[in-house]
Length: 332
Ligand code: UT7
Image 1: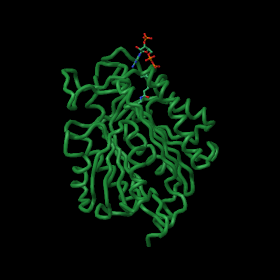
Image 2: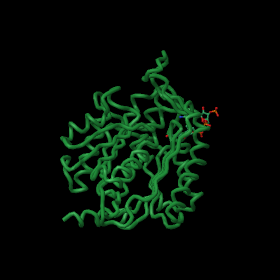
Image 3: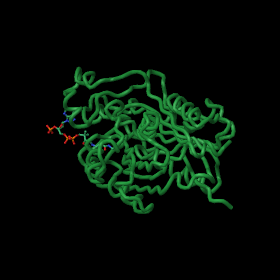
């Protein structure tokens, strides 16, 4: 039997149209555009319209990913949706997306690893495809973080935004590399570092808004991202210099800069779009990847490195070789 490889064949993203600037916060909070830009790299973020939910964003991103993969919803075997902000408690948001897309053959489930969700979902997708359990998957990261914010807390409200990104992951006997090593981690002892205390079964009277120990999170993120990235690079025998593009979770530009400098990666090899979106949690990597692909920053054969850290705490990294065109040509 031929070896099955998992390969990305399409990407898509969607952001709500309403833009909220740093000055919009400065108008009512004790903060400023310059503080937010200098300490986080964020200039503006997108905010979902009233009535617009996580599934609405996910459907738009998924449609674009299918289009770029030259596939239709009927070709999809499964939908993996990474989100910490589902439409409703259950059923999964993935099922709502499946119905809206008309992906009638697809199984569907949500996965929650907060900001690391997309890397977690990609790791599951790779395993499903390489074991032959599924041939074509939609992997989506979609979040409406704005509904979980304490708008009066300047330490968190300014950081987050809404958005969705999606990729099509396909099985291939043609490509030689595709998705390489992926590794995940978690340390639940730090669950309080970033959390929303209500909305689950451990009922509290507290509001369902994000609480974060920013400084601790920052330090742990830098340390853990570096360790996680070096682990997957070593597994695939790839040196940091061979990485064509780093697509990190967009939580703070200073975290990204610290990681890039530890890996000696120049700015042209690092995808940054936090200035326009803020932290969109599980959506940030697929949105950044889609923008990199559509912006001509990813070429056939390029090594692309994904890495994320977030609430849980959780982290994960993955190395892939971009072989979308090769796989699409082999279909016909
Ligand atoms: O996606 C999940 C992972 N999340 C992250 O990785 C987030 C990691 N953390 C961060 O990005 C940063 O820690 C923050 C952006 C949240 C905070 O930046 P910081 O440089 O660590 O600031 P700080 O928390 O040490 O606060 C420094 C000062 C404080 O004032 P005092 O105590 O020195 O008087 C804060 O109250 O900055 C103040 N401050 C602000 N000032 C203006 C905090 N937020 C703001 C604000 N505007 N929005």
